Length: 508
Image 1 (cartoon, rainbow, N blue to C red):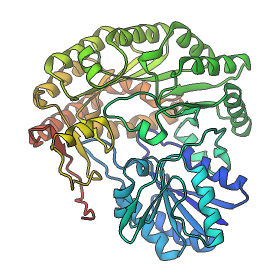
Image 2 (image 1 turned 90 degrees about the vertical axis):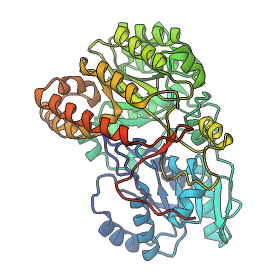
Image 3 (image 1 turned 90 degrees about the horizontal axis):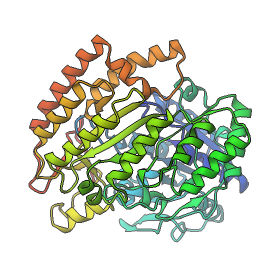
Image 4 (image 1 turned 180 degrees about the vertical axis):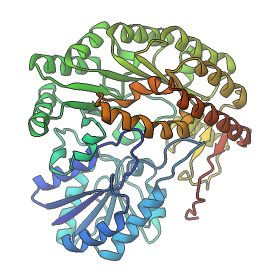
C-alpha cells in the first residue's frame, strides 16, 4: 500500500519541534512492507501548491494527518490552529478519494469534535503504529475500517469511540528517514528522543495521561544510547531533547539513561521539558550534568502546599525547595513554570509562589515563567469538576478555547502583583507577554544565529530583556495585556473564553 503521512503543525514559537510521532508511524509502516511518504509542512508557508503537486504524483491509498496542537493555550493572544488543518483536509479530499486518517495528540484529546469539524471519518486514538498497520491491511483487502483497535469512526453521523491504543514496546523513531532536519538544525531545535510513554501523575488540568496512558512503558537505556549515537553518526548534530512528559520519573530509569550515556562517553548536549519535583535527588542532577545536560524545564506550578494539593501534583513545597536547591547547585540552566488560577487560588497562595521564586530562583541560571489562567481540556479532572457542577453547558464544543480562573482570585490584582515582581527581575516573565516575546524573538533569534550561541534559546531571554529597546516593548505590551484582562468577562464559575482573531464556525 502507498501511504502518505502529513505533518500539519506549523507552530515554530519559540523553537520548531521535529515531528517524532509521525516518524514512529512511518517507520512501523515501512517495516510492514508499505511504501511510505512523509510531507512535513512546518516550514512551508504556502502549502497548497506543494500538496497539489505531491498528492497526485504519489497517488496514495491512504492519507494520514498528524495534528499536534488545537491552539496555543493563551487567552490573550490565542492562535487556533485547526482552520489551516481544514484547508489541508479539503485539499486532500479534492485530490484523492483515499481515506483520510487523523492522528496526533490533539486528536486524542478531542476526537469527536475534531473529526466533525474537519469532516473526517477516522481518527487514531493513542499510539499510531499498530492501528495504522491494521488500517493498511483492511484497505488492501477492501474491508471496512470500523473495529480496528484504537480507531474512532464517524458513521452515518454517529460517533463510534475507540479505546486508546497503547504499544507495549517501542524503540527508536527513525526520524531521519522521514524528516529533513536542515531547517530544524538552523533553528537549533533539539533532535527528539522519547525514553518512555505514559504518565502516572494525576494533575487536574493535564492531558498527558489521556494522550499516552496512565502507566509507564519504558525503553531500555542501552537502546536509547544506541539511538543517540546513530543520530550523531548520521548528522554530526549533538543537541538532543528528551521529550517525555516527565524525564525523571521513574527516577531509576533516568539514572540508568544518564549512566549509560556517561559509560559510552557520548559527547552531546541534552535538555528535557519534564523534571518533576516529586523524584529529584543530588545524584540525578550530578549524573545529568556529567552526561551532558545543559538545561532542564521544571513544572512546579506552585510553591503553595494548598495549591499543590488542589492541583493533585503529588509533591509538596519542600520537594519544590529541594529541587530548586539541587538545580541551583548543579549549575544547569532551569526554566521554571508556575500556573496561577486553579481551584482555591488566592492572593495569599500566589504570594507564596512569588516569594519562593524571589528567594530561590533569582539567579542567572533560572528563567521563571508565570501563567495566569488555566486552559480547560476535555477529560481532565478540572473539566469534569466544572462540568459536574453544571458550569459548562452540555452542548459546549471544547474546540473553542475555554479557560478557568478561580472566582476567589481577583484577576487584575493577581496580574498586577505578578507584573510588579517581574518588573525588577529580567529572568521573571509572564507567558501572557506573548506579543512581547514574539517580537523579541525575532530580534534575538537573529542575534543568536550570528553569534552561534548554543540552544536552548530561552536561557538568553533575561539578557534580551535587559536591552533598553526590549524593556520599552515589554512595558507597552504589559500595559496592553492589563487592559485586555480588564475586558475579560469571567462567569461566576470561573470559566471564560478566549477572543479569537477570526471567529470559528463549529458543527452543531
